[in-house]
Image (cartoon, rainbow, N blue to C red):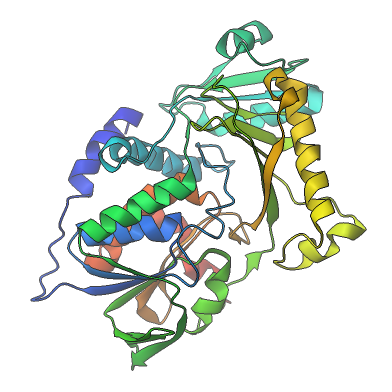
Length: 398
């Protein structure tokens, strides 16, 4: 299937309503109001389910709030690349009707030495032969694509014109707004305290706002997924994966690109004019980071937060002269919902067929496709072949 055909096919797979053969709509709870939960809620409500979202604090305040919001296909697994490409096509299908606000500016990935060149080539390799525009570029074309950049030595680089970026908080609220339009209820603060079963079938959930009768439940709670899954009798471990992004004060608009630079530095400019930047790696193994590297806590002191913000912005300034006169506005420390093998975990919980889980890193890129596939599986039981490698069953003991 081509990139364009994937977008066109959305209308056939994601029809507005799904016939379930039941006299009344299925009552489906969605635990989690981040971008994954919001997409699931929208797709379910649009398909005719009676949807209730249970959000412990407020929508888009967890990993979604701390995301770069880069929509891209890059990963080492060819199958995972294919899933991400399908989701990018869905982003394009939904962007304008839902007013998601995606900036389709493309991206540039580059390195500045031999080791970085190997990394750049490894990023591009799984896309070779795929119907996705990607081309190697030299320093001269880099300069023409982004005149405001000074990338320094370019040992290898490629341009991906179909990549995009989005404000993930805005997009989450748009998904939820459209879910409400189709009848969904969004409750917060509302923490799920327990799951009620009659034999193996779901009867409802107990929450801080009372008990709710349900037929199905989708757990999309990011780093809190293991805690909620235990209520369904399933143990799932996630990697502890801290990361942070820096937001600057606004400057004039100079680019729509996302930049994936040396030593895993990523940055972009939002439509508001703010630069958003971060390192796609954990904080260094230093004494001041012991707490952050061990558990999900905030910076222990404001001075450490400030130093991290300045460190990241100093790297951006090396490549972006426009940023040399601006200041850090905020530094967001977050924790990525990272499955142990780095791939999504999606599907019904073993022995509890009415309870489904969706947890993944790259939640922004994957939100539309996972919302679509999960809706089909929850409402009809028809399993998506594309999700076979990502089932929770792979983590059960032999």
